[in-house]
Image (cartoon, rainbow, N blue to C red; front, side, top):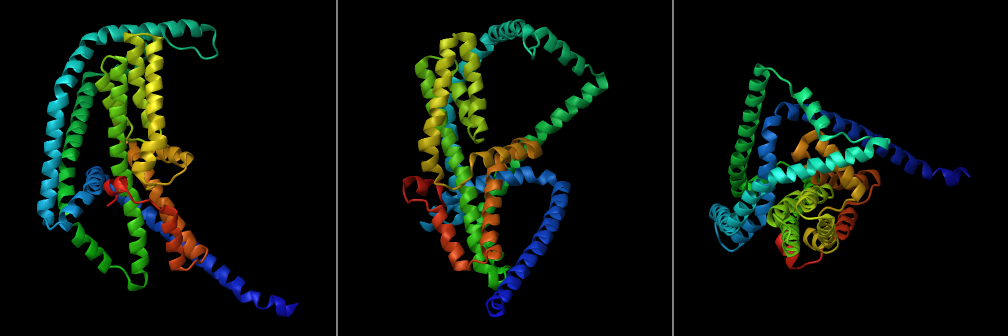
Length: 388
């Protein structure tokens, strides 16, 4: 019996030692993240333009890299890409601006009637809910509550106007600085990569580069895929609503496409304006048709478009996506919602790799082979578009 137990003792000691090292490493990593979080919060003003610039870099990097492989200098390739996108946006604007302007003017003219219809519907539901457990307030009750909360002095209103003006200026500055920062990052990206790799210790250089590639593939695939999916969904919804003859079909389709950028939650938020317009300008049957078109577009997206376009770049369970969106929206507002899913994917990739290599003790080559087989995107035209 002693002989059979003895050889196992070193293995047990080795596993206990490895667990202790991992525990101390996690504690140190937690402390480092906490310090970085405090510092990041102090300089939080720089993050919105950097985040938007990073998204632009991930979207445009494959185009600039392909131009560079064809012999075009990177500076010229970046400038050509910016110019091409600007011309495309101008052309698209010239094509849809008359229709959007017409529908916007029509919406402005019909807005008072739409508002009256919505208020009448709210009052009807409030009347029906008198005997319910939860009563719905009438429009006048809602207005009185808002007026009571909105009573402010002249000084407070001036302060509020100044704050709104400051926020508008800040947003405009973000959308101005982000493309400029993205331009310089796109031009210097190869040099930045070489400089970063030169700082890595030789013993872990290959491992860090491998994990970095996986992170880049996941984040870049998410941003490029979401933009392409939003465009396709917007076209599908606009076409369906136009066939249905719904007023403002293009505006509703654009809203649905933009909100589709936010996974899971966005598509249903984008459906609300279409249903409201159908109820106020047409009838319940039209609203049901609008809901059916929205649901059909989402089913096509979920089962056909996203699996092809995203190429399994971000593999997360829907429950994990919902929790990530909840945390991101609470902590960071709109930018938090936009970054919630790629951030969760980054955490999953890092945690999975560290668990395999440092906790389970898998050899590096075996862990890399398993991780590559897990991703496994098939080659094809869509992958060529969405992958760097």
